[in-house]
Length: 116
Image 1 (cartoon, rainbow, N blue to C red):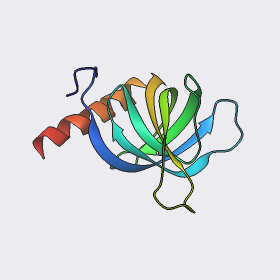
Image 2: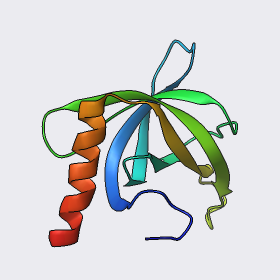
Image 3: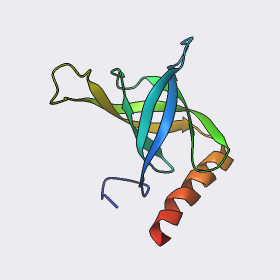
């Protein structure tokens, strides 16, 4: 585990839908890159402002969806080597309000990765 992190992370590739707080539409087609009990790294199609609160929805393996509020800690542009390809942004987000049951599900998912 990285010395600056509070929680262990697990690499993933799961679809994420997100909506800016107070927004009216969810953005689809973006992905989580890794996840921990404290937050996740998401690859998004538009820049997110540091400190912004975002509503995110995603699913770990299984039928249950997790819907929670996150705060953007950082957001950096990932430049594509292809000129006509739109930019992608890597955003580190922390969970602001997550149900205990959802946090436990994420923690279990991350922990299981150490034994598989």
